[in-house]
Length: 200
Image 1 (cartoon, rainbow, N blue to C red):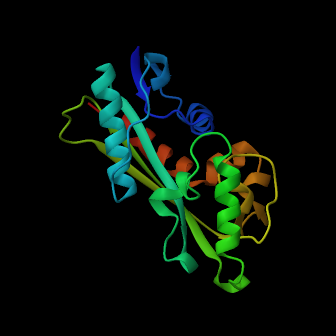
Image 2 (cartoon, rainbow, N blue to C red):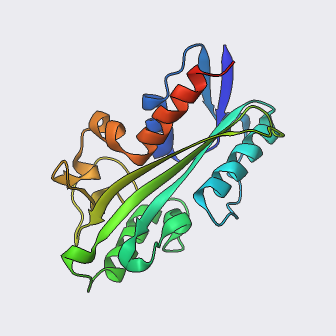
């Protein structure tokens, strides 16, 4: 049995990872089970931040680690909130989702419907050990647009504002299984599963 540390304390991510990432003979363990706190995200890109988080987790536990960094890119806001998606409103922890959504709505208030395009982006990084020179890096992109009001109660983060044209609803209105088959994180994790299955 291979133990892999998940470098995140985000409960929403933990739930999604567990439902998608079902690798044979592996045990996915949250870093909090080892007393590891979140790494400081100092990177300028999603890939950099995912590497920072994965390296931190594997350095602290001496086990292989998997991390993701993901966020929302809004065209009318020149790619913001981007890597600062989780702390867009400057609020950490409980209540941050609501604050971030309110700030996004305010920033988009005067943007017409045709200019509200956006996408979720996800970078997944897997490290075998802290000095792994060839990490596995997989990415996923989910295109959509930003609504002028929230809809739906599923998911987390910006899901209630992210409209998915192919489903004619928001991410937060999707059944979790459907969301996982479409989402940026689902895409990246499914790419990782293929890479994992081809490892020597």
